[in-house]
Structures are given as structure tokens and as C-alpha cells.
Amino acid sequence: MMVPRHRLVTRLTHWTNALAMAILLMSGLQILNAHPALYWGRAGYAPNGAWLDIYGAGTPPQGILRIGRTAYRTTGLLGVFGSGDHLVMKAFPGWLTIPSWRDLATGRRWHFFFAWVLVLNGMAYLAHAAITGHLRRDLLPDAGELAPRHLARDLWNHVRLRFPKGPAALAYNPLQKISYVFVILILAPLMALTGLAMSPGFDAASPWLLDLFGGRQSARSLHFIAASLLVLFFLAHMAALLAVGVWNELRSMITGRYRIEQSE
Amino acid sequence: MARLKSSRRRFLQDSVLSLGALAVSGCDRLSGSPSFRRLLDSADALTMRGQRLLIGGQALAREFTAADISPAFRANGTSMPADEAYQRLLQDRFADWRLQVDGEVERPASYSLAELQRLPSRTQITRHDCVEGWSAIARWQGVPLSLLLRAAGLRPAARYAVFHCADTYGGMPHKGGDERAGRYYESIDLIDAFHPQTILAYSLNGGPLPVENGAPLRLRVERQLGYKQAKYLMRVEITSRLDLIGEGRGGFWEDRGYEWYAGI
Image (tube, rainbow over all chains, first blue to last red; front, side, top):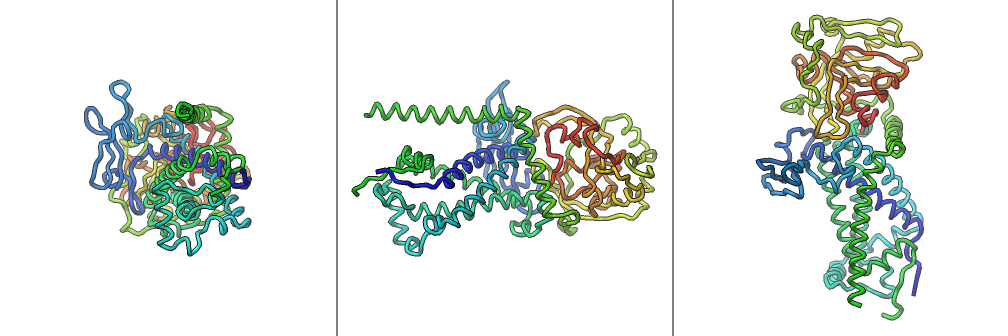
């Protein structure tokens, strides 16, 4: 039986968000390629003072990812690609960046344009979700769902890849609710605020942002960490899609209609 | 059924891979399209209007304490201008150097370094944010630009302050993009020109400004990124428009694709 699942505004903002997020991630890696080192505190400019550093070293050059005191050899993944005449030394590979070649100026242009798209789209979604009650009714977990026993059972169902097929499939399960709420109400605002905290102009308007994050370089590190968590969410989101059925879920996010089995 | 499933899976895999390739090459192609580039660039005007609305003309960039000063102030861009005229000035320790103030002003003037140092000065400990992502904190001392502009008397047509520099500079490989060499220059509007923290600095961390940091005089415009802080100043030209100077976009890096408003 086909039933309505996602409202038009939800579907439009979902795909706009997906596009903007993908472009922001890839242009963000282009920007990070210009100085692939992350610091804590107000200032930081020398990679040997960084807590995370991606570089190439040695002959022939090897790609190195250093986190704290631990260095990982990442040739082919990070830092160094190819060999001989085709040796490329940069932190992130071309297929992960916009544009694929090294170009900080163009990466920044993509990033800031789609940052506006993301923020305006996110605000439209949040306003719609708040006004229609979607946020309260469908997304915020209630006290019963947050009870440890309930969460444990839900986790067990996820581990066994057992998901409801009938009308119950229309409601989000507790783990799903928690991860959506975490992304929508915590990670996404954190991305926007740490991004703004890196702007010298915005800092003059809102010095409290610098205090909140512990300085501009800390904000830059948190921007990267929050982005990494969003990538993890995306991977889990894709895994869940595969587990419950790609076509039905994809259709419901495109046409709004979802197929449920009538008898349990 | 198994066969159908595997061919469907293959189709899915191929679709995802080719969509990915299409997306990457699509973004590359769009990056080179002038009209799409104009669309992306429009975000800069939106950012500037948004930030000006928030910070107004007067909000100050954060100032730090002596304890926050970075151990070294990293030099970026030109570190020793090869230009003959500059080399001659440097040999005489800038005894023959003069700063021209002209353009749309009632009383064009020129100042020796000693004359500038006798004028009232402002000292500030501020954070320098490079477009590449790093930050360093330093103490700057110099003449408020507003002082020189008031002495010169702006004509009604005045809109921008353009800073002409002594160094010819090539691009930077780790920034990528457009790496053509050219004479460095920068520009700001009158709101930033008259901002109290906008100074022409002759001192860094208590000593004379080192050559690698722009001796004898550099601009500090604290609510914008590092590339706006023009070094090796020779002339401040007040203009009504930017399109007739350099390649017409208001600065060396702006002509190579970077934002004119670098508050972000």
C-alpha cells in the first residue's frame, strides 16, 4: 500500500541540503589543502605546533598524517599521490576537492556561495519543521524512547538489521531520532557558527563566538571535526538506506510516497 | 532473481560512480565558466552587506594582550622585493623613501618615514588571519590612515583608498589557481579607510618593521584577511572607482580570483 511520507518542503530542503553539504565538504577540503594543519587556541601558523598535520616527506616522498605524536603513512590516500613524473603532493586528492586541481580562490568562492545556500535552506527547513510540528511530533524523542531499555532494544534491532515493515515503518525509531536531532540541532549549527568564527569581519561583530570556541584556530579545528562527524552520519545514513531498501526510501524522499506492508 | 539482483546492483554501482565522476567534472567545468563564476562571486557582495549590517563602520577587531603575541610573526607573500627601485631604497635604509597621498584629494602630500613617525600613532595587538587558514598575533604601531586622509581632504568623488606597493610578486604554488606575476596593490572602501584600527604600520612587536613583513610601511586593516594588509607601501591613491587600476578588481589577489571584501 502506498502512503504519503515526506512533505514537499521536507523533500525540497533535503535535496538542496544534500547538494550544498557535498559541495561544502569538497570545497572545504580544497581550502584545507592550502594549509593542512589544525591548531588549538587563538593563533597557530607553524605545522609543527599543530595537533593534526598532513604532509609529504622523504625520498621518494611519502604521505604522512600526524595526529598528536602518532604519524600514519597515508601515501595514496593523503599527502602524496602517484609516483615519478605524476607525483602530486597535496593533503587531499583531486577527486575529493572542488575544483579537482589546486585552486584556493575558486574553492573559497564555491564554499561561501553554498554556505549561504545551506544556511538559508536550513532556516527554511527549521521554520517549516517547527511550524508544522514535524520537529516535535516526528523528530524529538520522548522520555519513554530515551529510557535505557528502549534504546537497548532499538540498538539490538539495528544490529540484527530488523526494521518494521508495516505502518510502524512510518515513524522514526529512537536511534534515528537521536542522530537526526544531533545533526539538525547540534552539528549543523556548530558548522555554521565555527565557520563564522573564522571570519575576521564577523569576529568584530561577535567576539563572544571566539570565547565560545576558545579562539579562531580552535574554531577551525572544531569546524573540521564537526564536518568529519557529518561524513560519519552520511555513511550511517547510506548504510541504513541499504538495510531498509534503497528504492522505497529514495522514492519517498523524491515523490513523497512510501510503500508499507499491510499485515505485520 | 539472483542475476537480476546482481545486474541491478551493478547498475546501481555504475550509476553512483558515473554520477560522482559527472559531479566532479561538472564542478570543474562550472569553475571555468564565466557566468557561473559571476554567480558564485555574487556571494561576496551578500557577505559584505551582511557583515556591514552587523558590524557597522566602527566595531573593533579584538585586541589581545602582550602574553598572546605569537613567538614569531610568519611572513607570507614577498619576503624580499627584487625590484630595483626598492633595493635602492633599502640600501639607504629608506632615507629617500616617501609615501605619496594623492588622487581625489584637495591637498596631495608626501611623507618621509621620520615625518610619519612624528605623527600621532596607534598601537594594537591583533590577530592576522591568512587566507590559507593560519593565524598569528602581533603588536603593530603606526599612523591612523584617517589622519592622513583628513589632512589631505577628500573630494566628493572619493570612494576607495588604493595602496600601491613596491614589490612585484608571483602567485604561490600551494595556493594554486592563477599564478601570474604582477605589481602588488590593494584597495579598501572609505568605511575601512576611516576605521580607527586601520593604520599604516612602521613597527612590529616593538621593533622597526622587518623587510619580510613589509618595511618600511604596511597597511593594517584588522577586520579583513592577510592579503589585504599590503606591504612595501609607496603610494595611497584615493579614487572614485577600481576598474581602471591593475586588472580592475581592486587588488593583486582579487585580480587572481580572490574576494575583494576579505572579511571572511
